[in-house]
Image 1 (cartoon, one colour):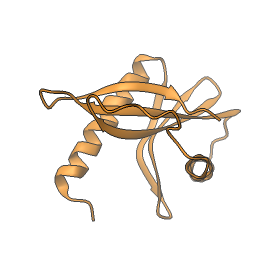
Image 2 (cartoon, rainbow, N blue to C red; image 1 turned 90 degrees about the vertical axis):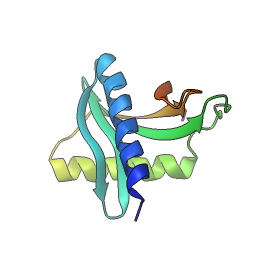
Image 3 (tube, one colour; image 1 turned 60 degrees about the vertical axis):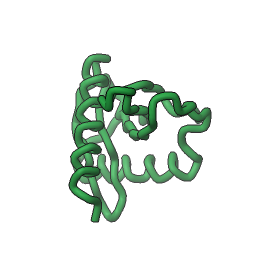
Image 4 (cartoon, one colour; image 1 turned 135 degrees about the vertical axis):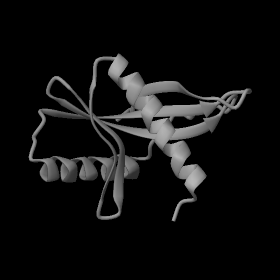
Length: 120
């Protein structure tokens, strides 16, 4: 089981990313959705597109890697997104997987440093 401080930090990170996504015009549908041992950090929609946002943590100054998600991670996220749609009885025309990087700045505050669609 994840220790409470880490669970709380993860929840705050999801809230920060969800606020960023809402500001960009997306509608938040779910956070921390879990099913059969798999999870989705943030589930959102924009028009006919279902958006799955995977959140990564980093320290300020850490380089942002080019390949933010492996092909295996993308496949698992797509399968979990399909499970989410079945569980919620909805269908979307498109599926997009995005990645958000949340960092701790020098003062110890958490902020969304990057948000982008995952390539491929």
